Amino acid sequence: MEVSAGLFLLPEDREEFLKFQAPKRPQYALVSSLDGIASLRGDWRGLLTPEGGDDAEESLPGHAILDRGRLIGRWEFDTETGTIAWASFVPREKALEKAVREMETFVREDLGDARSFALDTPKSRAPRIEKLRAMAQR
Figure 1 (cartoon, rainbow, N blue to C red):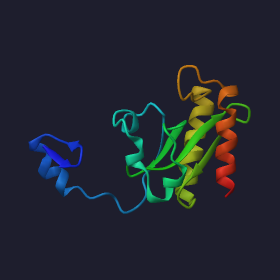
Figure 2 (figure 1 turned 120 degrees about the horizontal axis):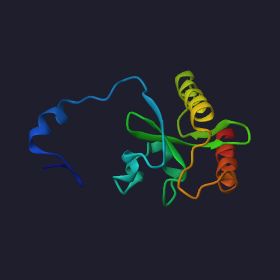
Figure 3 (figure 1 turned 180 degrees about the horizontal axis):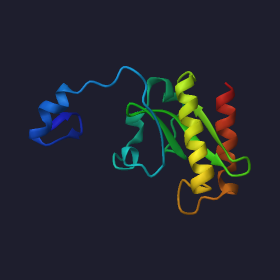
Figure 4 (figure 1 turned 90 degrees about the vertical axis):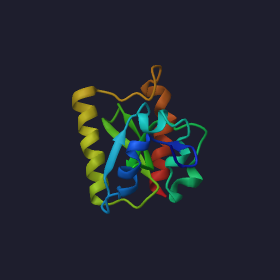
């Protein structure tokens, strides 16, 4: 059953889908570039907030920052500094900064790195990190 242009669900799920209301408060999630919310859609631009439209690229470069299912920013892990370089299309606020710090600690202490794809290296992502830091300064 089509619920809107190109979006389908099973008929028995329609009523529950129509009753759903997104939370009023932000629900930030820093996800991998391999996360199903973007990769299974085939069109990650549909996740963009109106604020993110000018920074759209052909494919999602690096990892995503989501809020209630909408793309609000991007992030990369910088192995040199052990920090996350990130930029958001929405104003920064404490809960968003806390979500970034939590992911930063997890990647640094438990994973050691967060690649965007199999051949991703700290050297190959350096330009993306620089671009994110420049975006964050705007």
